[in-house]
Length: 301
Image 1 (cartoon, rainbow, N blue to C red):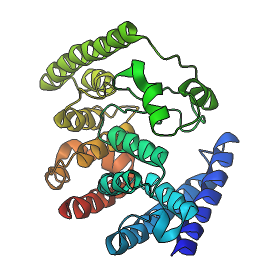
Image 2 (cartoon, helix red, strand yellow):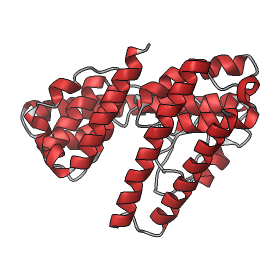
Image 3 (spheres, rainbow, N blue to C red):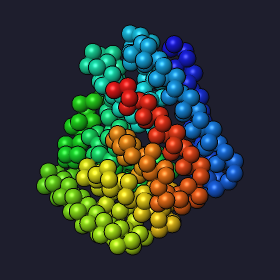
Image 4 (tube, rainbow, N blue to C red):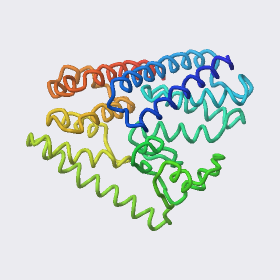
């Protein structure tokens, strides 16, 4: 089992490094890049399927079960199972139990905790997740809870790199705020959400879908405040307005699905999704697979 997990991890890393190099060379609009992206997604699904089987039979791959290296490799496979956030969420308490027993790396738990939180549009705790795609694009940390104490939490989970250095490695600057500034940032985030979601909802009800979508895009970035219905309505507004950022609709719907939203079967028949289906047929089919896999894992809880 240890060798099998290592082989999955090695293939995962080989393909991700290749994908990143192609992206850095500006090939992201090429047919070759798009085809390779599909191959990478297929590999992620294959690895996720196998990791699910392993975990269901043996539990979390602990140090005692497979060794320290393979245990870390297992975490990486789960960390990259982004098209099945419900599976990642199922793994979280298993990994935490292993960490508490001294049988897994605490930093792995921190990274997976944040990944699961961000997948649901919630605030992260350890500042491990950013919108920069590992430095490939401009970005910043997704919203952080109790931001002034983030470094303390990182150190408690054996994350050796400071949050400032971690941000720099992904090509953006970050400074930990003091308590007062952290509270101000949190309040500003809430106020921005309240302001923009109110406008978005009003514009949607008036069938002013493009303006609604613009405000929803701002509101749905306020992790920790966004409702599941906000994610769904934002996706509808993007599709109905034939918005230039239509690709965001699948991400928003995935956030809703990760929270256990069960309205996807109805949405499939909704005319509001017609533009999304026609403009991004591949992304729509991928979203349907995501929904199917999430339903499987939620049903196991």
